[in-house]
Image (tube, rainbow, N blue to C red):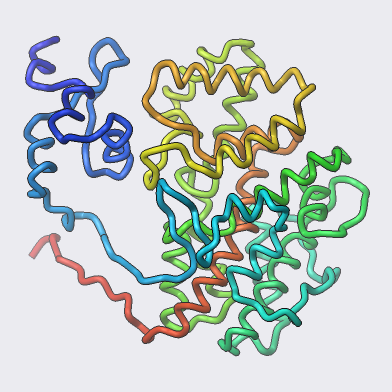
Length: 388
């Protein structure tokens, strides 16, 4: 080691000092609880013993520059053991054949007599991606005179109307029928007709992404609901946050990673370039999981089945293997989503659109729950540090 590195310890020793596995150590790094330094060899991760000791003893001030809060919820439970929605294992539900719309109704605790509306052809936009979705939500809001009704049934109705408008209002890329939300969205994201298996992957992706605990966009949605913003404004709040590369747009970088791997015919070079551009490998690691994201396995299994004969699938395997050999990070759902959009000949930002449409279901579920809480309950206090 150089003089600068001599006082630092390796990941193996750092994990031993904390009494955790290496995967947990890197989860701490992802959550911002711990910082790592890359050694001069460009590969080895090094850690400050003093910071490790402070974390071990619980002495680190986690309130400085960081907002931490706990919100009671009966919507979704996220853990290494299982991903539960309303007490049901989401992976098991999807594997049993439940569609995205059925998962949404479960999240919303919908009544059996509630149905999804037909397309609203008057709500259309030439904009694509998140911009198009925002404009469609605004148009749907303006045309709903009952948008300020915050009763659960009315909010659920608004949620169905929004999701339908968001999908059917996007410009169509291919001919075909719109028998489901997934098939309608497929036609707007790719020119290919696709096989039944391929289109089914999209429905599963929507279902798996419908909710995932108190993510940043969901927190924004709940804050909007806490001040009694209407459901359309709640969803708009979520859409304002979801587009970041560390949230709903993460699969775009994964898509580009596969494009680069195929162009170079070298997954190692492509991964190296991704590290240079992003400082990380998109599609790997997660702040909530110390083990593999269960949504990745559920979605990637179907991607592999649908594109089993496509030679491009080898680039997905190669990227995964290169990262697995060199880094202590598990694949997450964005890797599977990026692989799907690339193999389906969609644009790189298609995953962001899929994510936003799916997560709208979660935002509506959390808004219904938040409307039942005391209003205005989120008011962080600021500590002024500017000139006096």
